[in-house]
Image (cartoon, rainbow, N blue to C red; front, side, top):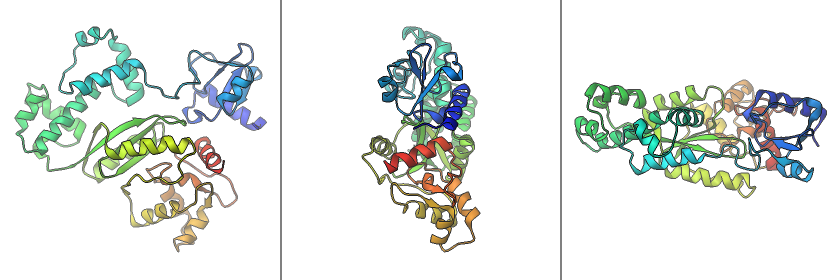
Length: 346
């Protein structure tokens, strides 16, 4: 049952188009008979004309029909056919340097492509395609090929242009490349909104909601601490966590098996290992975690380590609450934390 307080909170989230509330609630508009997502771009109704639901099924049973703009029955961040087509085109020929005429051949508008890629990946399509070319260059240089050969293979006639583009994406000049770690980043769609997964074939390094504050700094820190190049792509660990997340959100998985790489201090790692021991469907207080690691006075440090966790859901920092029963903080947003706790209890 949605309380009066929650209705006001949901209405404000709808006005703000707050993506943290995706799949947390749906809003039915009494004057039109349509129900929408919290992030629907349509004109917002007055509060008294809104009816709030916890699931799309509840809205349908209340005789509301799905909005054609935000499509509440589809995936929260469903990939458009345009993006699918272009990503497939890049994978089919990753060395290709795209020109305006190439978009015309696909009946794609250049500005639309730029806007959609920027919204989804945080980079334009040209930057995405360039990053894939640079990933190939990285592989060639690591295999012992000359820098000039990698430069020409990726379509750069200018050596300085290749070095500048390489350094911007990889964080190191090609001539200084000494077997760095290569991590790949992939966008994962979930019930609670899109997430970014970063890893290699051995382990998952990061899993965060895309709209988490400070995500850019977190990714940059990961790259620096691991001496890594992070490029678009997928790996065994990313495939694994994608499958497990689907099962988790369907209520069919309680324990994740994807190998993890924990990047943190000894104290942080100790806290994270303790978080993994919290049983599915249960919660613990920061105080209880501090006692469990034999540091009863380190409650604030435990809370800090909890907030520094960069493997959301998999290391269940959402299961840690205040000793008084209040939710406390959560990098992905309190409504997501509440949803995850309730999801596991059910």
